[in-house]
Image 1 (cartoon, rainbow, N blue to C red):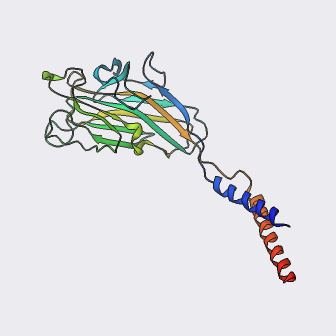
Image 2: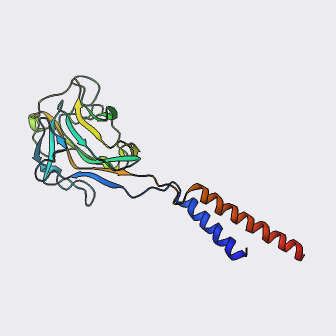
Image 3: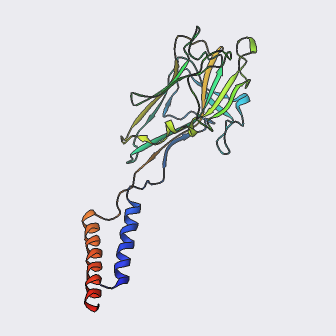
Length: 249
């Protein structure tokens, strides 16, 4: 076996090693911007499609609040049910989140406005959000690029007209990206709970541009026995070259 053949085999082996474990491109399995009829996969409870008002334009290019979003009172559960998912290893959740009016965070009364996401019965996210006054404690600390607006009047005229709103791009939070999942179905519940829950005219939340995607982790492109065979052939070629050089020396 000459040097060229050995080099070709080793190059192939290196290439195979490099592709082992690579991830395929994400596959979108659900997406809605809430403009138009509500998707049948969503059970809204008392939530309804509502004009985004002052939230319009917040968000990165191509992923901004606009038109309608799905607005919910605190205490109401919005459920997304997905079926027939393709084979996958991880799943990613992405959406814009609107914290509207007098959400009270955590701490002193009237405390207890925690946004929670339950994924197939397991808590994926549970953090408090505070809009009413600066002294309130908000447990959610957004990673860089997630917070779009904080304590800004974006409409909806909360009680007294002095409460403010906040906006977040949860698609930029790593907590929602590529977590383990392989089932063909998924049930996702979204809601705000806590003793501070009040009427929708006092406080609420909304989501826009909801997207769910799945990813499959790649495997070797050739069977393992063939990989070992090629590797052995490469080693044999190197040994043959070394012996030939020793005889010529």
